[in-house]
Each structure stands twice: as C-alpha cells, then as structure tokens.
Image (cartoon, rainbow, N blue to C red):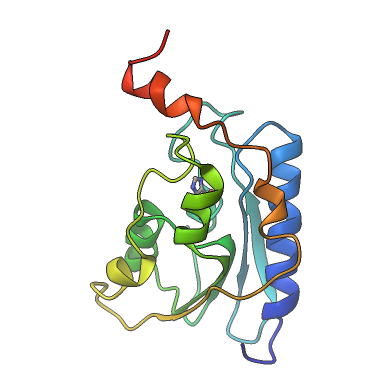
Length: 162
Ligand SMILES: Nc1nc2[nH]cnc2c(=O)[nH]1
C-alpha cells in the first residue's frame, strides 16, 4: 500500500458497499483515485435497483479515466470488471476482500460470485501493465457481506427449486 489516499479510499469503498446493501443492492463499492491520490469518483453496486446484472461498482467508474488512475474496490473485481479495466487506462487496482473469501461468504448464492477467476489472470492479458494489490485487510470488508447472501438462490437460478 502506498502512502497516497488508498487506505482512505478502501475504507470509503467498504462504506459505499454498506450503502449499496442498505439500498437493497449487492454490497460492493469502489473509489477511483488519480495519480496523486485525489478522489475522482466513487460508485456503489446498483444491480438490484437498476435491474442490471452488469451494474457493478467498478464498471461505473471506468468511463473517462485519466492516465495513471488507481481503482480501489471493497472486493476483488470480477472477470467482467477486470476485462473492462483492461480496456481503460487504469494502471493500478487495490482491493479489500479477495474473490476466494467472497465465494465462501456468498455460500453458493448464484448472484454473489458467479465468476471465481482471479482478477490478476484477466488483468495480465491487458495491453498495458496494471499493478494489482490485494487482498488488503480493511475493517468491515467481510462484515458487509455477513447474512446478505442466500445459498438457496443458486438452486432457483439453476431452475431446480420452486
Ligand atoms: N467486485 C465486485 N464484485 C461483484 N460481484 C457482484 N457485484 C460486484 C461488484 O459490484 N463488485
């Protein structure tokens, strides 16, 4: 972790995740910093409220990113967001909760961790170098998911439950 605004941005990303949860959305948040550590934008997941399965917090921040920006996320970006980060000019990604831990917390809920692919795997294929740091311990990053996910939802999505 550098001594830019990253620790504060990660704490804010977790706070935004809590706000998303309070609004009925999935508990994820993200903050974009410029090369000097100044906040350029912040976003919450709006998957449920917008009825948009692609409305992830990270994705919302990737339009009009200046060079050298850092994306700080409450959880490791999924494969979809990592792909979009590769299309952007973001040059550093920092995240709190790792996808493996997230998969454990979502306990099989099909809306929680649909892809387990590590973001590093996707970001390594980007046309420009992208530094990745995480998981970083951030207070509340695990707790914001506690009791939110429903394992039985996996069966509903698979069509095996009534
Ligand atoms: N990192 C991250 N993972 C997700 N999985 C489902 N939604 C999200 C999101 O908004 N961010």
